[in-house]
Length: 314
Image 1 (cartoon, rainbow, N blue to C red):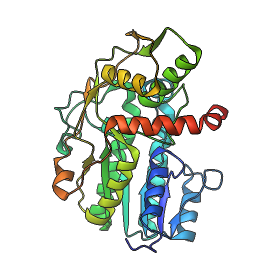
Image 2: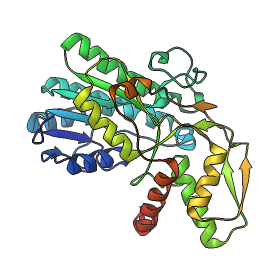
Image 3: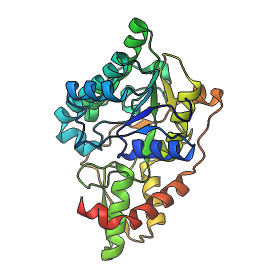
């Protein structure tokens, strides 16, 4: 990519897309294309094709889609499969129709089987059953991978697919109904600290193990892949370290400064028992994450405090 290349970031207001835009700007890219949902509904194929016909982006980073935690996935499975399938299908097909030089599709670690060997290798895709709590979302993400690979084979395009670890950071979704674990914990512990609650009830047993990645590191990895990776095979993006949800809870408590107790609600499902990525493929290419978990959590909490008024009005 040249500094003046036309680069379209789909989903630029979300956690991932906003981080990618920040990184592009910091790296000196001057022709970044973004458009709000009010102006372009990515669910509508004709609108997306019209947008691509008009703007003709040379590079596309597909970070748009419906995301959420276990509660959201279980309560809105139709939304998760429909919206993700439609968005990625429309953007990928339009990138082909209007001659994009390269596209990066961001999948999810949920695409891997529930009982996958750990850490999860790229070749484990479709080797077993998916985690039931977010299966519709995972099916959509697998379909996006397979669509990119099919277009590469049939049309000779350069559409690559990456699988990130669990993400967190500024511009995360802090909605208590459908947030992921880290923003949910930050909200819970901050509220408990302010209200001086003696204890906080948390989701599940705390036993699952996860790998968490600060979103600005992901953005750096995405640009690295856009410059240096052109293979059809998927590639994992992670940090190479994992932590139990229970230990994560105590770490977030420390960062927030909440001194009360924890009550584990084991009636809520844990999801994947363990989910970490084998990042040896990316490491061999010469990239690695830079932000330690505690530092990333502190940055996220600082951003949350600075934007609390706006978050509460959403």
